[in-house]
Image (cartoon, rainbow, N blue to C red; front, top):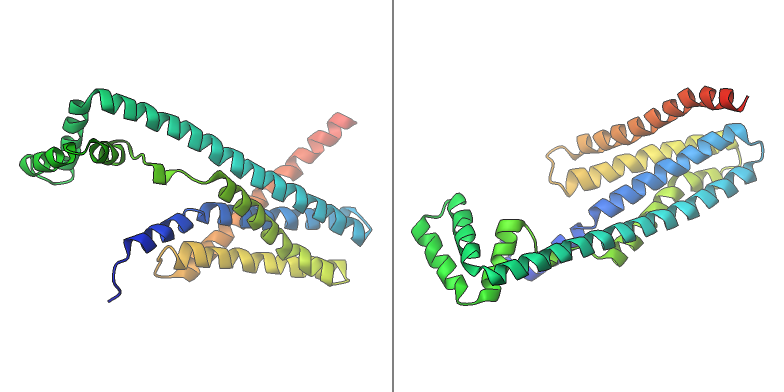
Length: 243
């Protein structure tokens, strides 16, 4: 049996906290680029024009997604840190309220009031330990819970770029537009399945990760299909307004 290593486990949890950015970036990059290739292949006669448009879309998408993730995480962190600071000031001015609330929280988790009282009394000897425990137990807040805006932005942008290359590379390497598009769509489906299989199946501990892969693929393609049909429905309205 492997020895428990809390420090290593903490680093693992911190790394896994970036799964959202990776999955979202790859999925969006794959579907966006595949949509650009499919849409322009039927509307533009020059293959090189399609590739240039897809490259421009990839660059713009990677920068936009990266910047969005950075700004979103940064704003969330600033707001949450401000709230945490308010909680700390209120806790410092009302330590007895914190003690009572923490005692009630421990009771809800199954401790007797007597045992909870001993724990709270012991924590109260070190106010920093008391307030830190209260922040996590009562408010679900802690410094460790905040994301890193720079890391999230880079991961999102790079993940989008990697996802975009999935349908784009076959299209670039295969001279035939139709065959290149077919290969791009095929690799798109394979990668979407693989992302679901790995992140929602293996890493999430599902007993049947293959079903997680198909579920992820179905949801991603379903969302893309809905967007496509909405576009078809809107197109006549736009054409009528122009006319």
